[in-house]
Image (cartoon, helix red, strand yellow):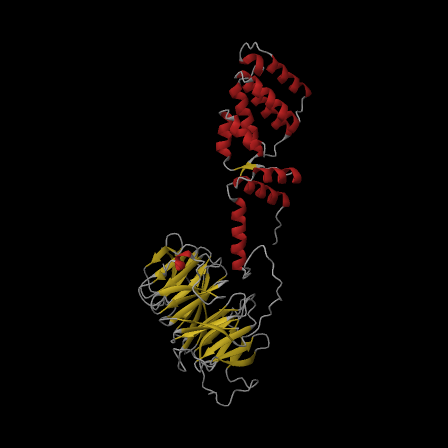
Length: 505
């Protein structure tokens, strides 16, 4: 469902923002030109108490920006004038009435005359002559009640908050703009397999896992370091202040798994003893969970983890405590865990089984049961179908009901295999192209990427990952072990036992 933002609400947020920044003249110009005033205050209860206390200088500083009924505005001005008269501030009362009568239309023509008469009179016999039988305090309470009915609370920083939410959504949707204000002319990028090497990152210790953010790639190393790399410069992203200050994210032992939250605000990392949740903007560790995990996945306000004990745990992001435990399914986990349909979970084990779990932790189906470890289980975008890849030359596409739809073989006869390429290749990692999942990328132990067309259900091509330039660290035939795909670009990364992460596009 598409929701449109009313233009007047945008103007109100802009007026509020300009006032908060001390740009009163700009705010006044926008209000006058648009004819749109505020219908909210930052703290409504406090504002109403100020009305009841007669703090009119502060109240009128707010009311001048408000869009209130004319008769209510007129009675507020009348109240202020009468209180000034009662306080013998006749000159101030006269000037205020003159200024206000030009800005607000009083519904009763006799009201201005009555106020002018009250100002001109110098003999006051008490409040009764001015208030007409109703006390000053009662009138204040009445005005506060009417204001409460027509005003709302608008916390400070609404415009910034709305823009931040929009940026988080754009990141979640894979819209990677360097600036919200500058629309660069880009040719719409079709979803295509990689054609060439696009760069490399070099490490002191081998990268064990990686995950893409819209503008970065995050790596977890055998040395326990979690580092965020700028995809444009291929250097540590110093836009994160903690990295600029060499205050890096760390584990005590090798990082085994990484996962980023859908809005790219949180990052989860795991080692042999601990799962940590980091706030990416500040580098703060907001949660530390004592458990070994080999796979991680976010879902809404939960973090799922799977470990070598064959148990899945759903952790609350606020408490870190396990809110649900899924056990009895696997002897141990491959690095495969997928959360679909809210809190429904699909898991894949080193025992060759793929299982579906409901939110309560019950195993509801075993989709696949093979005799080789599963290296990837992937949900096809826009469907319930799963791609299951095990440590063999074959991947399968299955439905939610476990019906086999297609097989993808490294030895597909529709695509000629290079003469020097062994037919005994086995897949060791896999991922889908983004954002539509048109291609399946299967990384094989012969340092080749097998690219399958999911729609045609054929082997599209075999892409060599050796470029005759292995870098200063070299690399053997089995040094690759992982692959990740960018959520919105034609970009993927491969990594393994060598001290390099390579980018391909």
